[in-house]
Amino acid sequence: MKKARATLLTALLSLILLLGAPMAAIAETTPQGGDHMDPTYDLRLSDEGTAYYISSSLGSDQNDGLSESTPWKSFAHIENMDLGPGDRVLLRRGDVWHERLTVRGNGRKDAWIFVGSYGDTADPKPQISLQNKRDDIALLATDISVGGQNGFGLNYIWIDNLHISHTLLGIYFRYDSSVGNKGIRVTNCSFSDINGPDLMAEAMTDVSFLTSVKGNLEDVQNGKVIPNAGGMAEYIWPTAINIGGRPPKPLANVTVPGIAEPATAVSEIELYRNAFEDCIIAVGANATTTTTEQAPTSAIPTPRTGGSAV
Image (cartoon, rainbow, N blue to C red; front, top):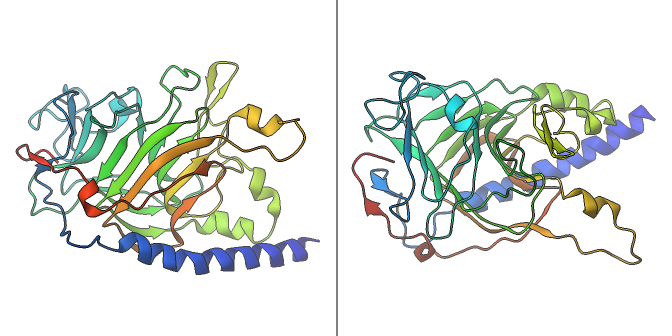
């Protein structure tokens, strides 16, 4: 039985690996007429919100994080925030972090939540680098609020100009308890060594990995946030940009006759000028249903200048 399961899983993995190559090629394509966006632009869409600065080399978590001269060192403060329209999380170019960045919040179409970079444009992109372990997720965007508010949502999140490496999941947009969300944008990011050898070895020998806990993810149960209760069958394969999570629980308990149409968890998904190297899968979507659109280059709003931020 185990041999048969291993054969099936090997076939599935082979299919996914084959699909991964064209996905990468499509996602890397530069839209007609567009050059790489100048990273000195301030990509916010309104004057709302607050900019938070983080530097692993120059920062301190005792700082206020509100200027380039007083940046935080780690991502701890951001993990404990529900961000709002126009808020920016800016990582210093040339710096490297070995920890997960968790983003929660709701932007608006005219005031996205923005995660990007600041500093000397001659320096490399800010990098999040982990260890390819089963719980490794470099950047988690989640619809579970700090207080566990049910159906909190995750809307209009823009991630730009980061390098992500040595992790099982690169960027994971996770929809656990809400539907009808809008706005995912990933631009100018690069990904390398997106893999999980330990988990892949487990997958090839026993299907129990489908229900094993991975990712060290939160879950909301009876209105309370339960640490490390999620991340079972909701994702499996190493993926650079993954859109998924779990449908709201009522969708799993539909008893009406016929085929139930699941609710759309997220729409308005835009990926531009991203590069992938040694990634098992470049872009993936699972568990939730999604709608995507390939907008023309002109759909990216015209950036306004704003000093070195971004």
